[in-house]
Length: 611
Image: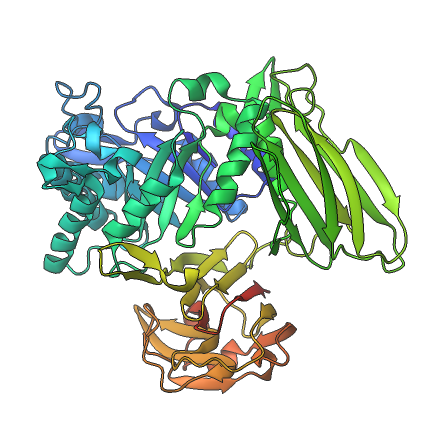
């Protein structure tokens, strides 16, 4: 979810995050906007040349509410602090020019940011620099952007994650003034040059903004710009809306917005290196305050339904009318289908559900939700109540179910079959240990024509809200990898593993399936241990890109629970304390836990539940 942090209404709305439980909240902090609630009192003051930084209750509340929910905070730092704002230049389209004294501004920002380093924060520098810096997508704005990025990242220090810079779709287009290269490519190249001179300059993610345009061009342009040498840098859709600016404000809170958003989300889920997809306009596009009430809009209700879907996607077969799309998923607890209709005409769809969870002696329920102008859309129709329009108790052990639904145009229908209201995966909490940071990897390779793709469509993603890791490899080869660093870990960490692996032993010499732990002592990593099954080729050479690196680990532990024959569903106890270096527990019990699936064969996928 995302929203400019301009109003105290945001504080009133944070409780509604519990109904969706997103992984990240993206908040814009515009330092020239001195009347925003997030800027009162102003966080930076200068008197007689002395800089004073201070917290304010607004950001304290945002930070504490996100931390309590284990939701990652990403703050977009936009514009110079007022003391170093070039007010004479700060006019549209050049809304956020370079600070008049970059070093002084960065030093002040660094001191202020350290007030909030008690919780993992991702700092995104600037916003849409191709027009917001110099007013033109030229080389000068690129160099200024990288100057700002380097100065701010260096001043804020090692506890944050750092990204830039909310690029927009046009930034992926070739430009004559940049020698036929895109703004994105030229900006990333400039950052490459800076990192050669300063190898410690972090680059943790790349962010994009998109309102009403196709996702593919910008994602492809960003991937091509990163190439194969920034594979630990994920793509993040920091701001997204399904309508263009102008129309986006008018269409907020409508059933059409919800239907188009689900279509866009389905497309985003198929992009393997898109780590985070953020819907903009938490207020008022998802929660709208009206008449003293918080109204849940169709987009909010659609995301709430999506959050009920099991994490194991299943294919949707058969034809659908124009403007209609669908997603389906299921596990042993729940089966679900979400159908959306972007057209202006109602559509009747015959759904044939297979492999639905059996009742097994309990009463299973079929629930149907309609979401359209007359259901769950309080700004289009009176009343904000939203719930199942149909509930049927099912008996028997049939694994198939047929259901005919009519989807209003525009609108959505959600069909769910399940025996339990509480879902052991979707409704679980994260670890009691403290998250330090997440690690991500995308197996990008550059082809002969300069285009970059993700090998094997491999993906790896970690959900810190629920402490769940997801891995998958669609092709024969590819590295699916993600990790999370925690402190305060237990001596034994229970892990629930579900995996689907080919019956045959993988042919690749890089094949690996396991969990690696890199133990952190002081300011470094002291030891690595790899728990693995029977998929491990000791000839492998591709290293873990963080921790102690290396293609396997300092210590190898065979875990039969991860063998191909047993891994359908297994419980694995990671004996962290038994394999830890001396003094690890007493020094904070800190470690990087990495989930590793490499070239295990087509269709491989796995899910790890921690704790």
